[in-house]
Amino acid sequence: MKSLIRPLHYLPAALLVICIAISCSKNNGNGNNNNNADSALIKTNLIVLSAWKYDTSGLDTNNSFTITQGGDTTVVPPCERDDSWTFASNNTGTVNTGTKHCTVGEAQTSSFTWSLSTDTKTLKASFNPVLQSGVTILKLDSTHFWVYRDSTYLGVNYRYIVELKH
Image 1 (cartoon, rainbow, N blue to C red):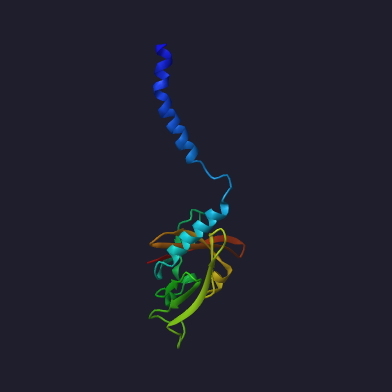
Image 2 (cartoon, rainbow, N blue to C red; image 1 turned 90 degrees about the vertical axis):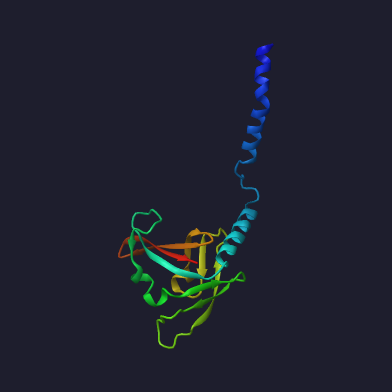
């Protein structure tokens, strides 16, 4: 009888562990639209938090999703590195061209539109030809907004990463 009572002491703890494991299990696909909507709202809130500024950019030469070779001047010219981009929740935004203008007479500010893909992984924006085609969001939090684009040049595949910050 004693041997039967001892395992019963552990029954409440075992049931608790089972309940926690079940409640933490992944969604089987039910409610996927809510997950995408929640993800879109979270990402939108982070994107529109405040103006983003250029930090650095370069090549990821080994598919590690980190810059392994700096290349600031090849894709982002010096005249754009002091620009800031303010995104609004209504999918519009403003580019402020900073003090280094790319062309004489360039407007200090200009408007753009932007969007996130339904899976919230791709950003498109109207102010840049690369962004018009879309870039993949690599990292997005309250202080970092990193995007990348996979491309091929002369038969060589490469990933170019641009890092923005607040």
